[in-house]
Image (cartoon, rainbow, N blue to C red; front, side):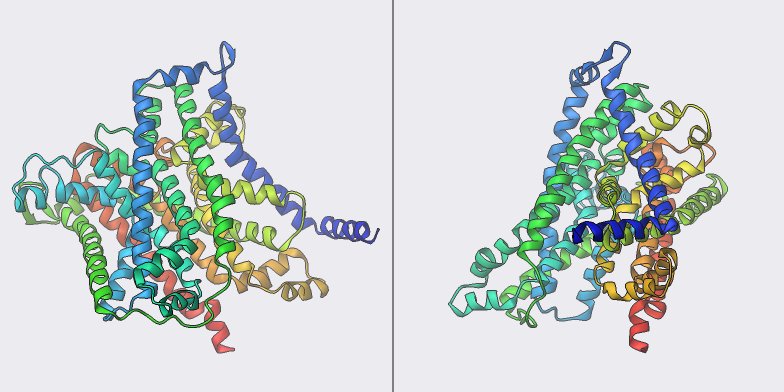
Length: 569
């Protein structure tokens, strides 16, 4: 009886806050309209034809040899990239957590190494691979005198994706390794076990669920990737590129929708396993912090080989990124390596560079604060409020993480150009800057939401409850109490959303119209034409923009962040 009265009281208190109710209704409408609806339209397109409801579209695409080959190619690349990225991430995380690095230079090099792929456009390494190892590559042709090296295809995609996505694995594994109690490993060492034995029998079993989690996250990223296979894939088609070509080349919207559903099915299955099985298992295995500080390995037989291996790999990746601005300064790529600024000049004089950077910057700048605020609101509702639709909001906002950009792009085309909304405001969205901003928001929402949930779980409920007891409404509490306490997470989400938006390509390449010029689309277009000088010039300026945004964020957090306020108090 008391329980029913308490639930009734909570319900009355909830509905007595109109701002909270309105926010939840608007959120549900936004998530349904811009995440669930496009995916539902894809399913309708795939199963409903002029002949009725059935599997005829799926049967038709399964008869296409290029589609069957694309599925096989995608899974092969995904498994290799997932395994390689998880192992490289584990290697670097182990060296950082367990090994005593001798110099600050090494620490700085490793930070640059894993930071560059995060803040750079996803296809920059593809350009570098072609510049260094293509038929006219600096290393292959001019240093090794190899004139027929083919960098395109399976190995090109796998290497580039591994170097692009492994930082995600590194960050996941670093957190897991730091949480292992050192006494568990030291007890095995005291019993005479070698370091290798300790790693194989103690450390590895503890992090194995987390390693599987890292593999699946990278696998999902790999099979959903569009930009790298498009630039360096050559004739090696993946599902993402096949779907793109099916709708832009063959004009087969139903076939492209069915292909998108197949790709979505694979990513959703992996996402469910990763999210609801491995992630939960990892948390249960490694809970709490280490009881005391870990004694770092100083044995030269361990530190020297690991440091050399990591340093060579880090220097290789840094060299690949340095090649991009150099590729933009060579006079004639592959023949004349005298330095020139003509490609940078042509970006702004001949190829409408100012418009491309202005459009990309403005649209990303509009999307990023909206994304950051939405992420914090969703996080707040999920962690701090109790209502029936809470599970729906959390699940759908995270669902965007599992939806490949190409799939979302086709869903938006089908949903907002020929779907239910054939007239009215929503029909008018297609082909506008607003639809691009919405895509940017949807693609970045899961990252900001996860960050916000983690930050909010560290805040004591009593802080906000005291504000409610003094008569403040939910909006006042959120803006004056909650948000200031998580402003580091808010600022981080804002810059992450900006970087992800300005470097996005897979979803927006299908939605962008001649009215808007976006940097990433320009880079992809010139790279496909073989105009690597112009592509590298665009990419170099884009890297400067994104890296500057991250540095600015770090400065803002350093001088105005929550941690500084706590220190001053």
